[in-house]
Length: 130
Image (tube, rainbow, N blue to C red):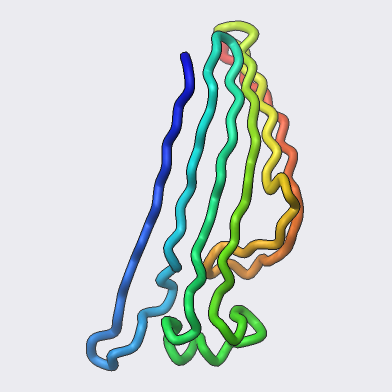
C-alpha cells in the first residue's frame, strides 16, 4: 500500500560516421513520471509523458527534406501528455480499470509516428480470473 513514484528517461544518439550525419529514427529525449496511491482494493494515479524537441540540424538530410510533412522548420516540437487512472479490485478474482488519457486534449505526436492530433481516450476494462 501507500504512495508510489517511478520515472523514466531515455536519451539516444547515433551518427553515420562515414558521412558524418545523424542516423534516422533517433528520437529526442523522452520519458515519463508515474505516481499512484495504493489503498486496499483501490489504486488511483497519474502519469505524465513528455518528449523534448529535436532540432532540425539533428535530422539527417533525407528527413530534413520532409519539412511540412513530418517536421516543422525547427525540427520536432516538444510535447506533454497527462493520463489519470483508477483501479478497483472488489474481489481477488475481479478488477475494473478506468483510464483517461491526454486529459488536457493536447496535440502531440510521438517521434516517427504518422499520427499527430489532439484527442482523449477513455478506457474502461474488466478482468476476471477463473
